[in-house]
Structures are given as C-alpha cells and as structure tokens.
Length: 281
Image (cartoon, rainbow, N blue to C red; front, top):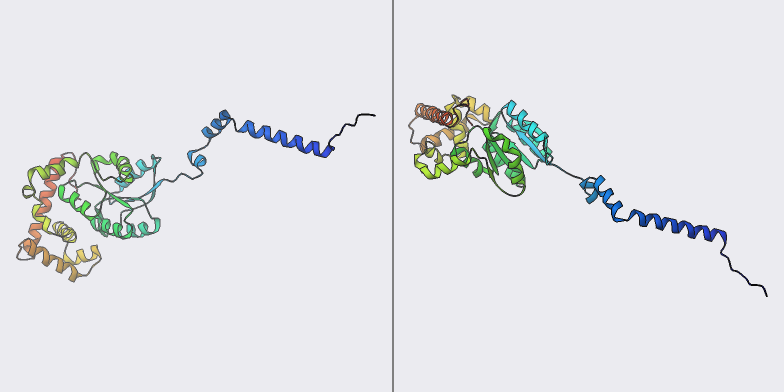
C-alpha cells in the first residue's frame, strides 16, 4: 500500500506564514535596544501620554520697561509662560478671571487701584493662584502689608533676576523673599519696630495707608475719589479715621503729615539704593 501524506490546504499555509512573520516583527520591535532608541526620540509628554503644560503667569506692573524685562525672562523659561500683561488694576481683575493664571507678578503702584488690594482680590477669587510682588519699595512695612494681604513672594526691583527662582519655589509650596529684601526684614526686628519711621503707620489699615500715601503725593479728595473709583464721601470717611488714629486735628495737619512720611520714605529708599531714582512703591 502506498504511503499517504496529509498536506494543509494552500490558503491555510499562507495564513500561518503571515502570522509567523508578524510575530517575528513584533518581537524585533520589543527588543530593549529598539525600545530605548524610541524613547529617546520622543518628548517626555509623548512617553507619559500627557502633554507638557507650563504654569501661566499674569504680569501686572505699572512700569513699562519692567514689564518688558519680566516678559523677556519668562520667555526664556521652560516652566512658565506669560498669559497676559497690564498696568491697570481693573483690567488686571478682568484678566485674572478670564485667563486663570497660576502666578501673578505684581507691582504695588498701578493705574486705577492699589496693588495691596489686588492681592486680596486675587486671593478671594482663587486662593490657589500665587501672587509675587516686584516693587521698588523694599521697606519692612510694604513687605509686611503684602504678605498680610496674601502675597506668596516679594522681590525688590534690583533682585528681578531671582524671579524665575521665586516662581519655582512658590510652585513647590514655599514662600520667597529676595536677597535684597531679607536684610530689611531682619533689620526691622533687630532694631525694634518703634525705631522704624513707619511704626506709627502700622495702626492704619491697608486702604487707609493707600489713601494716606496718595495724600502725601498731593492728591485732593476729588482726585482720590476718581483714582480709586469711590465716592468723595468714602474718601472723607477714610481721612477722618486716619486723623483719629494719628492724632491729627485737621486736613492741613493730615496733608503735612502725609508729605513728611512720603519724604522720609523716599530718603530711606535713597540711602539703601543711592544709585536708584526715588520711586516709591
């Protein structure tokens, strides 16, 4: 009897051969060397499956060249990106609500409002957003007011190069004070608060101190009402409270006291930074 050889149908053999070749290709692609090469050519976001995102920074400062410098520094960063800029307080509130920044870089002197009040507004609108002050005023009172209002960092204009480091520290949950500001804070504790020319101003609220500083710059009641977007009656009420706290008898004494305080503040700033123009707050 002849020997019978059982053979597979042609179509079935082709199917098995195709499966075998596919398996060989898959095993080749899964080799460690090929996997390493693939991972090196991908971005970290592609490897993790999540897109890379930069923390958004809103720049709010009253000095144009300072804003330009800040924007340039942020543009060089791999971690942060500018989402908006302005020198106007009401506009800053609008941008904050619309753009939802992670960090606000803030000056204390702005058009149409006060930086300290903005810090409070930002904290109430979104406590997770961090405000970092960048100011020409590095006196202990300004720093205390900023942190009391809710700021997470404070930088002197001279320490602007520390800005990205401050952003990084604050993003990791730490507060930040720049190298030029820290000695001022420590010095105020060593010398004692009563020896500081700003000691008697500690009794004033942030809003009262804001109005007091405007009076020292020569603003009238009506001009203040326009600048701060409040009524004349509101300004007069604040002036009455200021006079009571500082034991001043009339409006003339209030104006004289405010001018004297502003002059002392400017003199102290010039002593600490003789190369800088006396620009307050």
